[in-house]
Length: 142
Length: 76
Image (cartoon, one colour):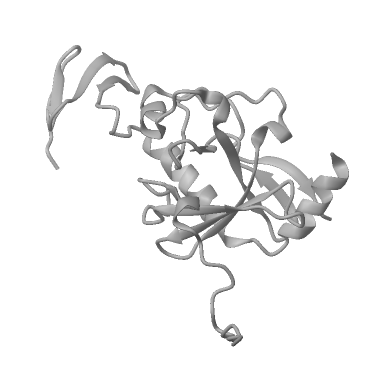
């Protein structure tokens, strides 16, 4: 017997092992403690960061090295410890993007989200020396 | 709020393992050194606030995301 899928059933249930723990949430979203990354051809090269543990919140981000190939952000000892970093080359970097009403899109290169896929842990790092712009304009739709 | 008077090189300790030392006292600023365990975040408040505001704006406007993505694909 084929049971039709209920109309109100969620389209996809997030498997537990794809949830990235953010033990401190994000500044302004401190109670968002778990996120998933959603990638799709329509979104590429952007990725969506969707909160699945905590209040509904969704962001889009981009690997800052796609915008600034020489991008380099030094992690503090505390950041490395909290992310459980043993090998920096595996880390995923995302700069969150703000799209203004006029269509200007800007990425936050100063405080990127760093995710360690080995420990499935992420946090937004805030380098003490602000080398990069908080608003790096990437495109203008006007 | 607790209020202390501290001179150069004097410290205060907070809880277990947090130490704040006055390194220099200038005319318009005080230079502080902070020792804290790795699991305690220490930030200048204005920086935390800036990032918080940036995050709030980032969460607010996902409407034109596909347009921005398409434009980035074209330009790369």
